[in-house]
Length: 196
Image (cartoon, rainbow, N blue to C red):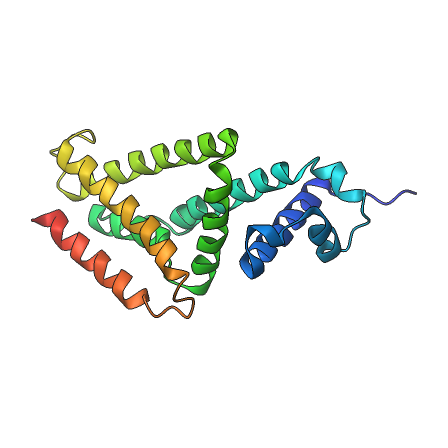
């Protein structure tokens, strides 16, 4: 009887290998050859799952963005609107080694997406969804009297996104997590600003 292969599991394993290689050596380290070697597959086996490096990159990008969304949704969302906002903001900041590693992958993939419109469109859609979710959280945390399109709300949502992206980039210079207290202090300041 032939061995049953879980193709979705194989794809997830290949993406995990690509992420690991990017974390260790940047985008250039994740070649088709190095991915095959690290995953322990025969040379032609990778093509059954991903026809090109771009397809692996797209799957890796989607995986990292999905993990970010899962972190936001992982725990039961607090019923208090301010705590729900805090939860979402903290989920997107590099507050542990895992998220610092994810930032390294995102940085490599952002650079690659500059020359790949499909990846750029994927990330723009992610940013739009992120901004909308933050605006809803911010409006609720400010008492619910403002629309999600109110400039005060949208400016705060943009600030959070800019800080999260900037913190992700900066954290790569301090992979030991030295900046984590600074990022936590930012969240405290943001929460104070929300009520002012």
